[in-house]
Image (tube, rainbow, N blue to C red; front, side, top):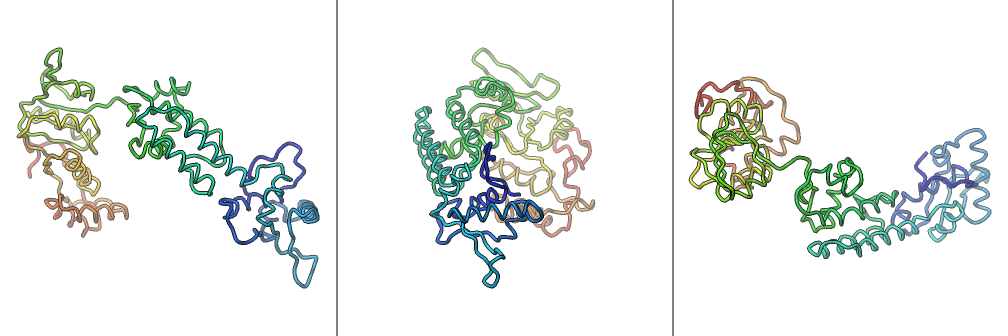
Length: 414
């Protein structure tokens, strides 16, 4: 049986067949949008089947309810042209929508659209910080229009206005959040429970994008973080902070630097002549043990802390990236170049086809086509063409090279 428009109210005297018909109507174009040139009709036998009334007493009761509704003018029953005892279709005129749903004791689709639009229109007047006020009002107005016209209101819901209200009251408080905090702390402050922001994160991201004019796309953009922003580094690095200099290169192992400290540093220096970004943490740790004097940075698609560190380094350094040799690995290289503006070169990112690897997925092949059409990746096009021509990826993972066999740059034979 399809979902009914609302739970059946206590004491509702209508049977499943009428509630099912109402649910079918609500999913029709007329029910969704209020627009239509013809009456809504449902096949009689299909309606009985979907309402669980195809046989026995449920069928007899469904017939009684349909005939009663037809006698009071709520519906029309269309019979077989040669046998008046055979019902073929059940029909509802668009003009009769409100009366039909009133008799069922549930709000009509038109009333629900109006109520939903009013909810978004009222939200437009909620107090938000001045920098978001214009985008917020415009977003709410667009949602109200979509609600009236039966369009998409995602990530909000047509069926659960109480959930909409929770989101609409929470979003202005999120936009007013200042400073960086971990998500569970912010969730306790804003929602009264530590996991609620995690539960809503996907929907909140979509709503924030819509109601901020695409300027905010996630909780991270507001400083509400799943984990602190930081970057994993190994090698010589000196942060000159207002309170004094810290030589992190004296540490024997990798270290994690907070973006807050990177932002606070007056200067960031290194004695290294090259920077090597490494996609996988496993390989990064193997290389860091060599202490070869290069500045190693672990990153896939670079986050804000990684980008800030790279942007603060002295000029004149060489920049290299060591990643997996699959389309996704080369896309990370592309992203590094694009988002940092630095001339990264690839290291050991070759097609190692002597070992049969997994086949390329359709998605990976589409990505490969885009990379081959990207002029900034011209230096890597030969490897990408080898991948494109091969039935498999080969030994594409960094770890397939094993432990570094050289104690210094470039760590593995070329």
